[in-house]
Length: 254
Image (cartoon, rainbow, N blue to C red; front, side):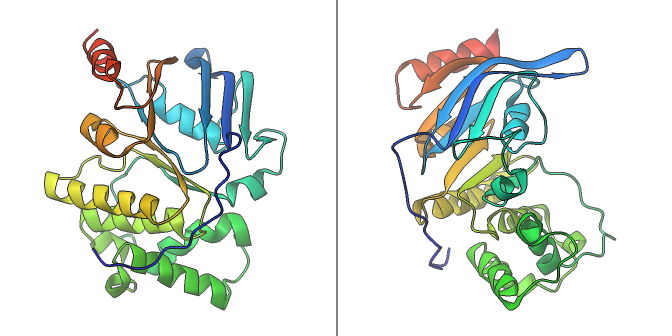
């Protein structure tokens, strides 16, 4: 990988920048998560794991304000996500949802897809400035996709598309980067490349990463802290702790 320097933000570990307290979310009458309590600090690389349908994605969506809890509070940078300035809060976060298949005929160019990550800051109907275009170039440099900036995203491989989506997530130089299964549907070699890219972004910045992954090995190797969920948080701590493996076996094999 290249050695592109990445923007650093000032760290503050005195109090959590994300705090979920007694959070419960339901879709119609189905409770997706309940009694979720999590504190995430500046510069954490926080991994979230759990079986399918355990509410992992719901936790991320709750943090970014995409779904509303019917119980509990979610604070980001000290502000209630449902009561604060949602646009200002979202402008400080980058979010990569679960990967979806992109139609080969989808006409959007790579650079335009990356630019979509700036809409929370500039608004959907404002013209991008020279500074904004410079951010797009910078994000593409970080993920090593500059040469493909003018190519339709539908013409790229799955791994290349995922790099573009990561660039979209970091183009606004966020304080928090949320990644939902960034390795899904990728072959082993490409998965390793994406792993190294995410680790590079974390190592060279103070960005806080919150990542859902089924790759327990990745969580153990790279994450500073982790939580295992099954609609509620059943374990949290450092993945290097001895009981982490026992918890994983219990959750995934129950």
